[in-house]
Image (cartoon, rainbow, N blue to C red; front, side, top):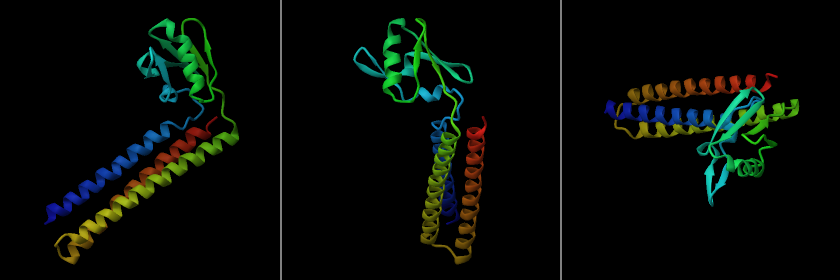
Length: 184
């Protein structure tokens, strides 16, 4: 009987960890004004008729905090890569120096920084909703188990403590991202 309840707790914890992992992945897409190769993760290039992710045909690195350098493995693809970056509509203007594609990341305006903070907070709220959904599901599962009311109550308390722990983690992640975005 307790094994079944322990399994409910373990499954709930896994769901909550997956929600936090998803949040962290989503926050990577919110740029904080610093150059990051992840910024180009959505760019696909027409490679002999096939749409191929840029990361599979070039090295992407950051020579400094405001610059991305894309070094293609085949020099003949520089034009296609430039076109793909423009088509991806990321707000970047690629420059071609014959060897590689250089992208200067424009500094964020104060207004844009505030928008990005709002976006990060919204992602955090969505994750909290997901965590609370997992808590609700777990509590329903605990009520279905044939156990005494005291045991069920204790497991519901454990689930609530787990929920509080993950909500606190989410708040910390969002606070850190907010600082990162607002740091000029």
